[in-house]
Image (cartoon, rainbow, N blue to C red; front, side, top):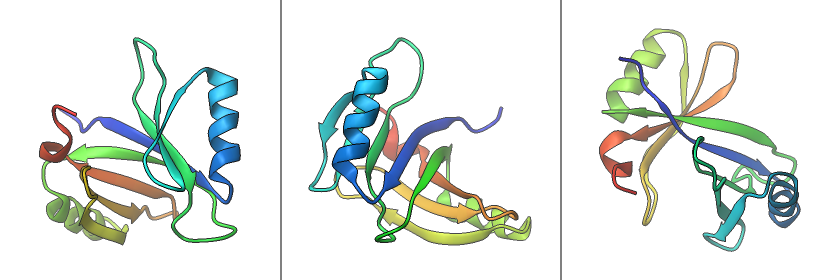
Length: 122
């Protein structure tokens, strides 16, 4: 069985404007999770939750990231690196949240990983 996509993230320079846009465009519920980030709940029978906020990379950074659930972040990053990808961040434990990491694929796309045990039952 393959690994599922379990979260998405849309970040840019103006968190409030992005959050308002997606709320108004798609009817998503927005729940603040800090001064520059909010959790997004599509409030639909299908789909996954996500987040919208300021890019941690700073001004001018903008990206959309999907997060793939894996059993072991270190093992997954090792495999990714053997296949030509690169670790970008982590692993790290988000306070009150999951354990995550970021990698870039061979073409430079930034993709996230979440540790399975850290998000179950959330």
